[in-house]
Each structure stands twice: as C-alpha cells, then as structure tokens.
Image 1 (cartoon, rainbow, N blue to C red):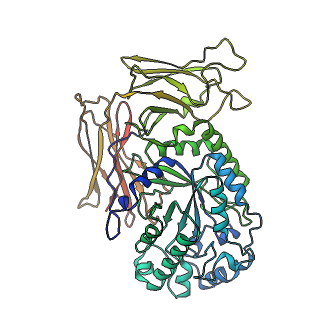
Image 2: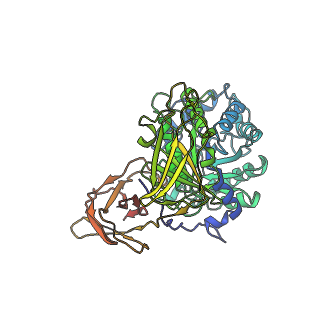
Image 3: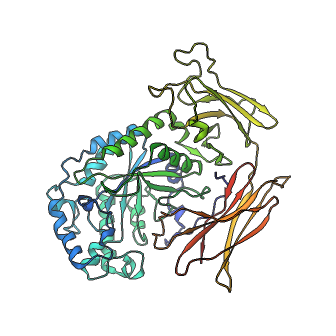
Length: 538
C-alpha cells in the first residue's frame, strides 16, 4: 500500500523557450487534471492480422514488410465501424476525453492526408475515420485528442533504413525527410480537424509539439511534455499533471486469440490508484478489423460505467490527500478541499459486505472538525429496501485512536445483495491528522566485486520521529529490452531490515550481466507503506 509524499521533480522539456510542464498553459493543465478518465483507441491496418500493432515490422524480413505495405491496404474495410455508438458508450461510461491513434509506428495514416498514399482513403473503406470519430465524440461532449507517432516504419522501409525505434539513426531529427513528413502531418491534424484538446506524441516530439501549440495554444501535449507511464502506476504521486496509459488486457491492438482482459474490479482499482496519486487514467480499447469493439471489452467498459455513474464525484476534479491510502482505504480530495473521498477497496469492501450490513473504519490520517459529515455516494442514507428496521445513517466519532466512520451499504446495485466494486464514503470539512515521512531513493553505487549497493533514506517532520516496527527495503525491476515508457515486468522485493528511526539504509544486489534495472526504496511504516522515487541502476 502506497502513501503520498512529496512528488518527484519533473524532467525539463526540450523546447526553445520553456520547460515541458509550462509549455502547456497552466490553466489547461488544471483542466486536464480535472478530467480523470480518458479513452485511448488503438486501431490500425494490422488489426486485420490480430498481431501486435506495428511492432511485427521491427526485425521483419524485407518480404514480410513489403507484403505488409502492399497487401494490407487492399483488404482493410471496417464496415462495422460505428463511431456514434462508440462515443455514446464512452459518454455513458464516464470518459471525459478520448485519444485516437491517427498514425502508429507502422506509418498508416487513419485520416485523409496529402502526404502519403499509405492511408485510410487508399483502402476499400475510403472514408476519413479520424474525422468521423472526432465528430461523434464532440457530439457527446467528450474532449477530443490525437495520438501521433513521429517514428514511421513506412518511411524507413521506403528509404532503405532498418525498421526500429529509440535509436538515434532512425529518429526524425536525424532524418530531414522524415521530420518534414511528420511536420506536414501534424500541421494537417492541427489545422483541419477542429479543436484538439489533447495531443500524445509516442516518440521524439522535438520539432513537432511547437506546431501543436502554435496551431492551437490551448491543446495539452501529454506524452512529449508530461509524465505518461505506460502499463504501470507509479508508487507515489508525480509532480503536476500526469497520465497513466493502460490496456484493458495485455494488448494495445486487437489480438482476438491472445489477449486476456483484466477483471473489471482490477480496472476500477487501477483508476482509483491513479487518481489517488493525482494522475489521469487513459484506458485503451481496440476495435477489430471490422471496426466493432469486441463484446468482452464493451462489457468491461459498461461495468466500469456503472461504477462511475455512482462514484464519479470521487474521480472528477480531485487531487491527492496527504496520503494515497490506509491499507484498502484509498483517498481522493475535491479540488476545493471541501470533500474527502474514502474509497473502500479489496477485502474491506468485498468480504461479505452485503446490502444492509454496517461496517466501521478507523482513519489514522483524518481528523474530524465541527463541520464534518459522512455519507455514501449514490445513496440517501435513509433506508434499505425491504429492511425498514435498519438505521442506514452514516456516523462519525473522533476517538484517541483515530476517526471512526460507520456506514451501511444501503443501495441495491445487483439482483444479489453484493456488489464487488468499491464503495465510496464522502467526508466533508476534515483536517489532516498525520504528516507522512519522506522516502528517497539515492543513486546506487557499483562495487568492485560486481555487486551494486542500493541506497535510500527516510526522514520525518513529526515531533516524534520513531516508528517502532517500521522496516526499510528495496524493490528492483528488470527493464531490459523495454520501451522507455512501458513497464511490463513486476517488482522484485529484496529482504527488509528494521528501520525504527529516520536515516540511511543500504542493501546489496547482484545484476545479471547485460541487463538493465531500475530500483525504488520502500518504507513499511506502522501506518502505511511509502515508496521512494524510481531510480535507474546505471
């Protein structure tokens, strides 16, 4: 369980005038932080094959790439594509903005472009998919956003260059022809498709993102200017606006026989964890080759929507509390500071908590004031259907061991008396009762014997700094061969050591030759667990 702490510093951007966070207008960053939940749509020409989007071209034979580029446009005809239906679903599910893959790394343009024949208008479908999507989502009041890959495998193939990413020789800044193509395409997207609220560069944005801001100064550039962790949620809040982008399953594009979707409670949990740390969740769906959303993905989105319909107040226009969570109780706070939302997750929510049952929770980091009131989102706190004998009112009592909150699960969400998704308690006008320690991960040191000394520390501003029973440890993650944004492997936890007092702590780690790692420090405090910033193991 993670605890909020002082956010890690943002890295500076690569523009000629300002750093990346402030290149986005501050008022637009505040708008972006309020949105909470966005819909990512990954779709391209290789959905016909059910293969990974774009990346099958990296390391492919010349014959494979040639057939990819010559044959697939001849058969792409998504006649089941219904953008109005998808936009209605997104609105119902509570998505406040969308981001569509106009061009993924394979170079296929999903809009009517004058820059290349490798585009949607040179397929049997012919219609401008980007225009259709943006029109439908705007009609539903959802802010529109675009994804764009500066890496273009089609351009590399045409110019006899190896198809790969993240190496200097294939970047746009090393290839004037590719840079010119990208600049022309970004200009088209920013000048021909109306207001674009969000732009996501999946690659080097230098020389491109300034086109976005010159064309539409209110557009928020996310990847390319902000932190956008992929397939993982940071252990602590990041500075300023940020966005986690995650798949519903394991794949970005449609892989009908390989993808395994996450359970809907895991999807909701991810959203809660992201918002408790101050970020937005950009959740990906992947239409089929025919343009329809797979039934299992739609079912997950609709169930997420049922939870958002009840509890969206705890997601929209919120900021982190002094801590992210106390065990299975997660927190967000309204931007005006008036309401604190206690999101009851995990065993605390599902273990036999039936409609009509009362439960009590003790909060260590929250203190009541004379104006504090408690309620459960979605319900009136006045009755339980068919159970007139039950007092459904929410109660609070400040005691020496913390704030006691007692609530009844009164609203009926299913035919059964149970609902496996989190219950949200709203507390008004509370005060902070705890200042969390600060945990830092210090740069590791390589030793002459080939091991690495991992280093971290924790400090506290509390008058009483002792934390009897606290332990300090490190977690290491192998990132060999990963995209710099994506993290598919989990953390390996090294042995813990007693840490009852603030101070510095170390551990020894032996890396495998040729592997790359990152590390973070972990303080298991008696109240909560805190994570230090992630640091690369050089």
